[in-house]
Image 1 (tube, rainbow, N blue to C red):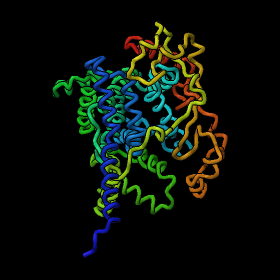
Image 2 (cartoon, rainbow, N blue to C red; image 1 turned 90 degrees about the vertical axis):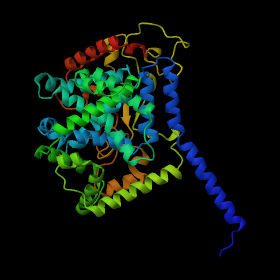
Image 3 (cartoon, rainbow, N blue to C red; image 1 turned 180 degrees about the vertical axis):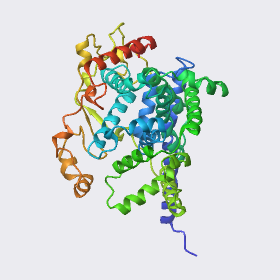
Image 4 (tube, one colour; image 1 turned 90 degrees about the horizontal axis):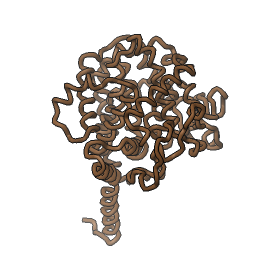
Length: 453
């Protein structure tokens, strides 16, 4: 029998202390989010402040669960391809299928989502991104080609799919404060997109007892409606598979060899539910691949929960960068003066829209602050080349070996940044359409009190 030496005791005690410390700090952010909800209820017993909801949502996406939460956003857009009324419209444009245009379309979608979901509510970039997204869909909605159910389903998938992946694959589940934040944010998005969600969600609101929190009730009702809608609408069509293959090809651009790409694609089907997998035309995942993938994911979850400290806020994932943050202005004309004492104490300094610089004229609203992307998936659109990301990083060398573009290699990638009104397909990309949607949003915002955020 081996002797237990003092060195072994010290090592064992050190490991125990480390595991206990990780266990303690691992849940700090969850406790912080719960505390924000408790403190915000002291101001309003039923409504979480919208900017608090954004703050929690950003924390979940870029600090707490930076991998699977973002993959949930990507899978949510992928999930919309399984609804024939959506896929039949999307398949009509080559921008979502052709390898030459798909990378830019992906980046533009990412930029618009980040701008209207995470940009401070009521600022000029938020207004422009929300208006541009509305303009893209306006013609389809008016003609009936895109139904309100399709708009609501897309919103529901974006809200719930990250939660589903986190609860299946991450080291902890989301708490009520975090679900309330998601519900609060997406309810405001539905208002901004002028989606009549109350008609569709009313039966599901009545079925479940109220939690006393508007955002949480909205999230549960939205999820219930989504599941019922998928049960009757999600089915296979050839257009589904065309869009599916193009999306997977884009996401696997960095994977070499047809055989390896096929293996990774098969492994990816393990994170799809049966309804989604069948609607995309995939056969059941081979048992050995499913078990191997599940074992790797379980090992990752165990390591994160017990051995890895949380990502510090200083190392949050950064997807974009404003070259001059002071140029971000409020889109609403300032109707009251906010003193330092009136600023919501739960919000970070400078987060109140009307505590910043108001845009009092149409010319100011037209101005788009210069913003660049920091990371990219397939092509470095809107990414500024640096010595690191063009010449020295391991990812750049791998991308170069694969024959893929790197930052600064081509001017077509617009390394100086993007202009929000110029993003997206040509449809609705006119000054008149942008102005019309901005003014409609300002009217909605005034009715909702967004000028006082």
